[in-house]
Length: 230
Image (tube, rainbow, N blue to C red; front, side):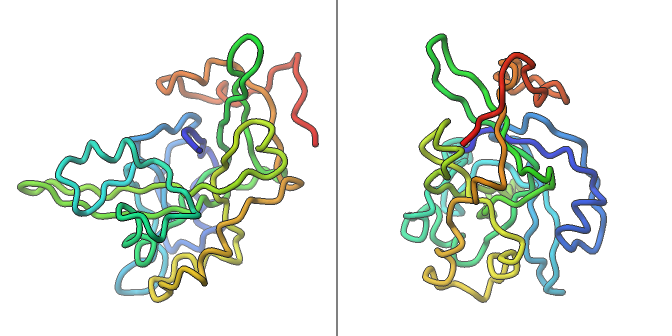
């Protein structure tokens, strides 16, 4: 599962890494939580390029009567996403890259849950495999929303949780975003655990536990504890 993440990388770096025509306007976020806007790269209609959109985290199926259902759809299991009614249409035609530079997980310990911050060793931003959906309600109400795909954990994340978000390799971005590719057998090989050796996880303060807390202090390592080692 992935229920909280960060995106504090400068917008110019994101535009370059994800080949965006325009540099987006983004504020640093250190505690992104479900139902909040997230930055997602998707196929731009018309010109065939990439656009960055702010999507509500928690996918609302196009057929839903109540958008509140989205709060239960923040993650989708990659193993079954192609068959699930809530996700299968988006899996075929509306895939996206949810941009992040780290995420959080909580480890059960003797005296409670210890939060950890997980990022790439090179500290670069990366892309969660995401799906997006367009929902129309009564009147002019519309919401574009998304979900993050999860998979089996790698050896590092397994020390914290039994699932991890799918992090796509940059060379797979074009295939994942291509709306012309709809065959599950072409997409499923991308939905694998990210290599453990390219990631690092270290303990942080429980201050991050509240989604209302924001700022760089969310990711400050605890001086008295060491990062996880494999």
